[in-house]
Amino acid sequence: MSATSRGTAIDTAVHAPAHSRLTRRRVLWCAIGLCLALGLVCQRIAHVRLVWINLSPSAPRGLYLSQWDQEIPVGRYIIFAVPRRVQALVSTWGWPDDATLLKPVAAGPGDLVCQAGHNLFINTVFAAQQRTTDTHGTTLPRFRGCARLTDRQFFTLATGSPRSFDSRYFGVVSRAQIIAVVRPLAVFERATSEGEPCAV
Image (cartoon, rainbow, N blue to C red):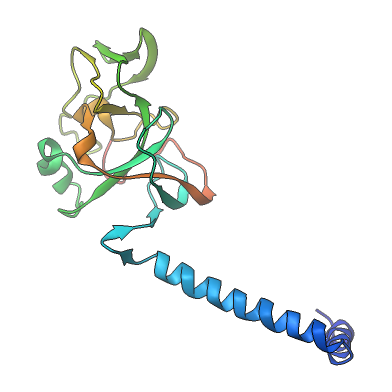
């Protein structure tokens, strides 16, 4: 802003009516309150995290807001701990013991997920391919066979990121494993095909 424009802004404020100055003061306090509220939201309130940060390239990077929906439809993002059956593997990638994953739900209760060769199908429609090794050459576990998902089972798949580490490798995610159901709040970058660091 130029010196002239700054002077104009100050001059306008000085000559504004009293009620306008009061309105501005209220707006200022509201803005401060909002900043404080956002600071609190980013903490754990009653042991429930409300806002999550995703830095993985397999899903849009940014902030995600917890939802309280009882149902988890296809397309919704879920956050869950790395399944125990692959914890030893991800530890070789340098992931912490308490690492969590944020993935989109590709199939839910009633859906049929099948594997044939290196291909995955959901309700007989091609969904994704499975890789055989990670970037270190280590053989990856793979979901195999067919599974008709029950009312508390979900299959995660980042179809736009072929190198995503998701259910194509560790299989079905149960409702009990899910820590949070979230939706994008402020996305800074779209998902890419890079996949998780040091992973697939």
